Image (cartoon, rainbow, N blue to C red; front, side):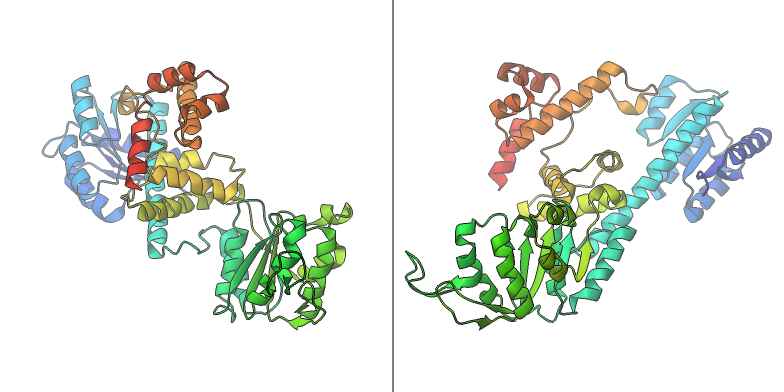
Length: 454
């Protein structure tokens, strides 16, 4: 793959050829022009990654070319080069949209660095545009979002298994979307018109599990003043989703196994079996082998559930989907809270792709919703970063990271400064001082406005 497609403009033919040859050797695809008007026409039709142009040229100069490209093709980065550069011209060029500004004779490595960054920025913008198009095509909150090979394979497997009336085991880490996949299996199946009944096996106490799941008859226990159908009966003609199946007590596992094998239930206090027409979709955080080995999960129940399985990849294994998912959840949150949809900056997508995402998609969704409400914006820098060429110093990096932690703690505590300070292990007074020092004092105002709007 080419390092990038460069459109090079210079009225000095010798310098133009030398620069074009050198950039080509460096791995770029280069189109060289000594007439700016020809370069402009080519840029409109050939979509280069970057335009590099001399400033001082007869007729149309580099600044004019910059302005024309900005009006017609504002997404193409333009780098200006001149032997007559000065600070005021640099400032003017940057204000008018130039990507960067170099003086002749320029350092070869410096130009390569500028071009690499410009190419990466343009390609990131193109990717964001593609992802936003995908998001805009359909905004159903319950669809499986993603364009990575792993998610395309997942959607294909769901589509294949949906209409096969067989029990399914879904395996995936916490927050990967196991219930979403279960809902998709139900929605695409012949049972779609029937109920989808979710049962969290880890949330129901064992003492009431049987009553809730299998139902009971009047007088079965103290307080049973009338007959009650359980969740399995209620799901007749539809799908039962058993979430966190690994947390189900062994005694109850045997009873669930009977339902799977015979498709009947017995209400508490009743000996009459009742037929149930249901499909079982179960979910677990792991493949259950460790639970079976430790005697916590019945092997026969596992094999009955795992006739077919669906495995959901963690978010860290599908980084190319992060921008799409973030935009999807931010868009849904904006609609829900009546906020305008905010474009996601390329820098933010790059930052998100570096995170570990232990909470997987659920964690990403929470960040996207805060973004949609404007509650997690970084502090505004005091200096204009566009005119900086040096890398941030260590103190600057430390300060930026501290500001990020302060902002994150404040948002996670839902605006409770005392709780945020405690979570960081610092006094409340110190927390408030740091909030002001990093320009984050308006977080309170933004959070208050968000609460009023809701």
